[in-house]
Image 1 (spheres, helix red, strand yellow):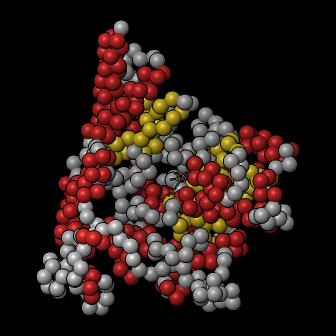
Image 2 (cartoon, helix red, strand yellow):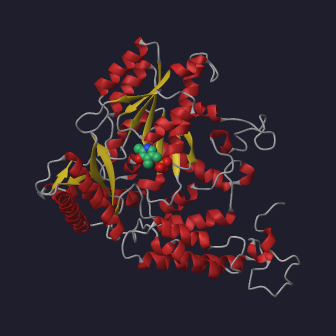
Length: 515
Ligand SMILES: *Cc1c(COP(=O)(O)O)cnc(C)c1O
């Protein structure tokens, strides 16, 4: 055993009882004799977290990374504090006091949500029981609950009786798995294998606004750097089906194979929903796998008002839904669902110790047969307790509130002379930029928006996201909190306008000094 801190340890162990109140070993691990310790520990932890939520005055304190790095580095990991209370107290300055709070009404930056309370409770159960989802003999009812939720989601997606799927750690993992199935399905149809040169003729088409995880997946799947073909978007930032049609025809002419089309139902920046019906028709005509990335738009499945916007998913071969975005679930909770259960076999590998080839999947279902992971957390329990407590309609109504708020915010921002809104929000993001009076230079406009965003975050008063459109900086509200009001968003944009004015004034002051 080589430990770099070994020299600091006493050569003879400290006699029992002489050190601080470190829990006895049998109390440090959960067992029938330590359940009181569990209850007290979880209670203490949740109180510390709840206090931090209650006391958060803004979405962030605008912490300095170097400062937090120093505080974290100062904790001696070889010298435990000897009690959960002390460790929880230490966590305040290291983490909780300066956390970024997604429940705060002026956190409107990324696709993060305030979390469902029953879901947090479910996470405590999931960690306490610690089921592992790989095999039936490590999970029992957990496997049944996950399977039922996959079935329920597949029904809402309209994927038909042979649909199946598996929970994953997120949209990135769900997209990767979907494209792995598409790759192996396509190669099988061509009578080829992964090792064959045909791999490099496979192409994946997605819109110019598709998620970067598609490119990452293509790379991980060995397809090569230029395997992802970017299809132009229309003026509403949806994939242009005519452009897709031309791209598919061109690939065929070049003897390349359109392995999959990834339609996005809710692009990360704009919330655009690609025309799913038209894309489905083209996929059929060209024999391409249709994947729908509904990581963001998947919340529409529960929406009382807008569910019809996702109708086209029924034609998909596979769909990604992130429950940890528009379903108000804590990270991580996502699912990949396929229309034909058989296609999941491309993710099936066997191990004698775990899921031997001769095991009967009807008798004892092993979810590892469908998953890219082995040991896997019971992340489906959160959604289950949310649906059984709050219900899908209420979840969907909360997302609807965010969608309506985005429309109202876009209208309110448009009415301000110093603000430009890029497009009518198809979902719950608003892409906009501030335009300080008299600024026409593009670079200065970018600087003003960048600076305004940074200063807003550093002030702790609000958090917005940023993106680029046609090479220029734009800002973005991502609305996933039904408690956010129009007044919050007016306040945020007012602050951004002030900060942008300051940036421009400072820049022109500096320019005067230099001349
Ligand atoms: C968020 C997002 C992803 C990635 O999901 P993760 O859960 O962050 O891995 C993929 N696609 C779209 C459209 C997304 O918005």
